[in-house]
Length: 140
Length: 397
Ligand SMILES: [Zn+2]
Image 1 (cartoon, rainbow over the protein chains, first blue to last red):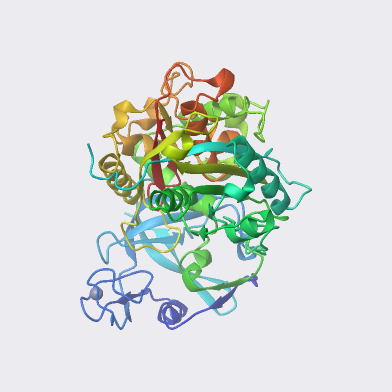
Image 2 (image 1 turned 90 degrees about the vertical axis):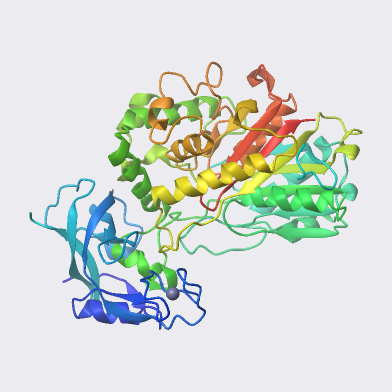
């Protein structure tokens, strides 16, 4: 485990996500009015326009499709100094068409993915008490 | 004729540009005052004539550097006060595509009669230390959705849509090398450029280190200290001034198209925003300008792959074809489509849209010297990403 120097300050709009991650679950905010998933949660629902979306963090499928990736070679935050080079993927989640998230590819010695590769969420403790969702390749 | 030409016509009538340095030993405010005075003189005016000041003072770093007016940024109120001007308007727009927004504010202030002469400036600073590196371990707010996932800073942000482009359309590093080499070739001819006298070879480009694959070192503009200033006024007043005026013919801003984690750029979002922006630009031209009328198209290249997005959004080629379009001299300033004739950000340094505006001004006013293009009546300056960014049409007065 790493003692990487990152201090997260979750707020009411994010603590549901980080609490779930600690339980190795992916939970995303859903609008109480229209049921749409949105990341990040916003004061006004980007889908239906309600000003009272009352975001609820709900467990979702962590499976998805790789739309792009980058191999990060320069660390721009001290938490990643010991991890470079590492792969970050842009993933469209199965949970909702068009819903894109980024996550590190956590497979050991991973080769760069191909467009359309299938992935599923996996979890890594980046610092004490901070578990971060990432992805691993699905084996077909 | 368009119905978009309400109010008086507005033109650029003079300019000045400081030397672009990696790090200046002078405070940014001192360089800005020198440059502003030079621009006012160039326009045949005095400080007493200038009654409007417009700028975007943003320091475009995510590294949390200290912001001090007159030192690391220069706002319009600071500049107006320091010059001792009797300003009726000192406006600042902070956000994406600063130059487009500044031109829009200046043009409308002049067209409405709120001001008679506007000084528009952009001052860029390269702070000590690493430009984008986080200076604190704390992560909160919008950054929670990207930074803990290892997505930190603009180079990582732009690498994702660029790789999406590569994965879809088979673009190669050799293709982007031609873009960067053309920008640096033209930048090497500019006396003020950081890269003056320093063109780049394809071999040197290809051997440079990777930053965040597929983004490599020379795909990124270099952070610098530098200042540009332009003087704008109405075309009736411009007729009495020394240089050929360059008229602001129209402009359009790009708008976000999807709600995303901050900094997550998606290729399809950029293209959608780009097509909307370009259609709006033609609609808002005062004289019905469209793509084929443009002699001096200056595309934005703060990250080199953005050239592909702009080429395709403007319709110079089909979607997915820009990486082929840029090859074999087709974007040569002398013999092709001169999209980087002014060097761009890659050939000047991180001047945030100034090179595109300046090249339009220099070419359309006939002041480009030995670089003067044969035909330069209509110009287009693109700034930033089509998403959030903007574009301005100019015509020779
Ligand atoms: Zn909703």
